[in-house]
Image 1: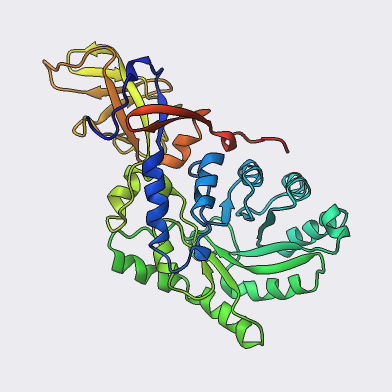
Image 2: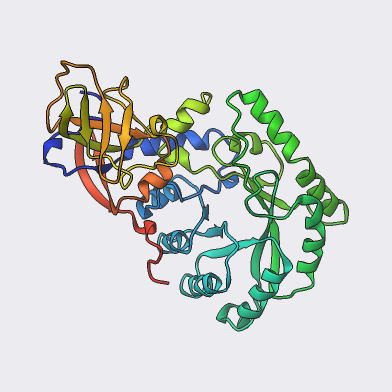
Length: 372
């Protein structure tokens, strides 16, 4: 029996998200070996969106986390996380929700991103009327830097002015810099490291400038899966891999030096035989991330030679050889090219240990709102 085979799978409705708990635990142990200190890790929870995985990481000694949404940030409050960075610059409605989290989960230290002073003034104005402000606390913020992703953030060369403006607003507490470098994806590790070093030159110069003015080297929060091990060698830097806990085919193919295990799959099955050289499985857009081109959305562990030829909301068509032996009901174990948005398509994850279903976990942070 292969590691991914589930006993009594014929009784599981498909498509189904399967989480292999022991393999996820192995991945958590593995990521800890890739940094000098667990304090350097601030894993991104957008990959898994599961309270249970958060607690597994906490049990392994990880205390800080990064979230992309209010729901993910609340999930971390529910899990009792000590330190949560909302890696997003909230607009006014979202910031009011964020203030609710700060109020309702006082044991969790929440912070968020900022890349312009107008948003900073809005944060300060709303925060000044909050319960936290009444106790004399300030809102912790990280300045979001644009180091080449060109999605959000301020260019490092312009960030010094924003840093100084924050110092004059008593309701805000500067905690450091944040930079997402998801554009750095070179397959060759040496080329990736050189790319990373080049794109962070101005960010490092900015940190050194602030340090030389009599402060300490500001914290830098940076590094997704492709670059976190590179950033981990820097002083006063936190790393934010997320995909490592489940891994996916996309990173398996492009990050050959990282030895994480597949720990989440989608179980799907043949639902139709529409032509003598085609089969159809129940793995549509609504069950697997589909932002990549058709042949680069999924692989099949038990049929690695097969590639999809058609895709729609509830179906995936696969071309096969004439005279094939596939039957209605045959099970495929699919590994997504991109696991993060795939997880978000499922309400529940079925937990597998030793080939048996042992639990069902609610993918609680897939929702836009949990409570607030």
